[in-house]
Image 1 (cartoon, rainbow, N blue to C red):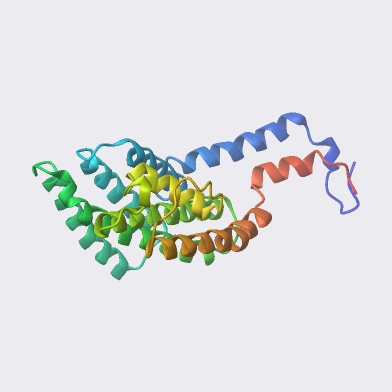
Image 2 (cartoon, rainbow, N blue to C red):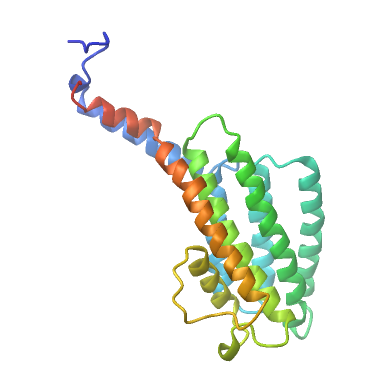
Length: 252
């Protein structure tokens, strides 16, 4: 039996074939989390960086910096960043690695935090720009586009968190006023509730430039969700899942 277009009747597609298509789509997704050329692996590294950032001690900053280097380098590789961008980033990677090694031998690890988070701020602002530029010119909206947008969004949140930490170290008044200068864990928390405009209000920058940065982050977060992520989610139709759903639908 055929449909009006002359093809097989979608309602007669075997259930086994529908399940196989869904399984192939899932395998493609899982493969993305293992491939160095996929944003799936970048997403995993971002999550690892976040967990380390909120849990490591000052001595553990060395491990955090090394994971940051891998994460940003992988982001630039996957996003096919330009040669000059990668060369500039490589120079920062060398400085960051040197800082991480020096952190193991100094008596007061906190003395190197200004360099650690200064470099992290630069690198984590460069990475999402490269990712957005790459996915914006992809010929179609697919799984990689979706994962890339998610990576860019999370990288922006982490970039602002490292910026807050840097400001908290540099400025004399405590960054969060009566709540103190804050910890990296608190900076991460504050950054992402600001990016998503959740705003619990338990942590608030006491003065500028923290207040201005928070407003800027909230605006970026909303614009990114409404324009980039919203459009991608609307347009994205996983190939295997879409075919499977259409196969089981009654003919029009």
